[in-house]
Image 1 (cartoon, rainbow, N blue to C red):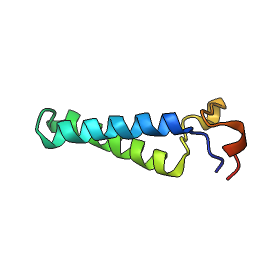
Image 2: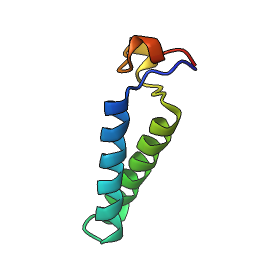
Image 3: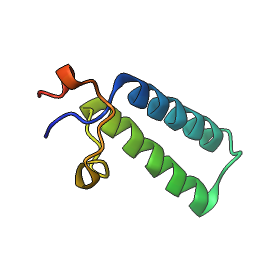
Length: 71
């Protein structure tokens, strides 16, 4: 897997995941919608940790700098 996520992309995804988790665990969002959003937040964290987004690959999208694409 080649890296296709830059630092800004990773930070934004982790921030969104943290907001979703906070809203879920404070019961602002709950039920099925809450669980779906919580899973989405977990996917955001996972993709940020590995610096690879599988949805970017088929479209050739990359938000990382040219020199950091090697992995």
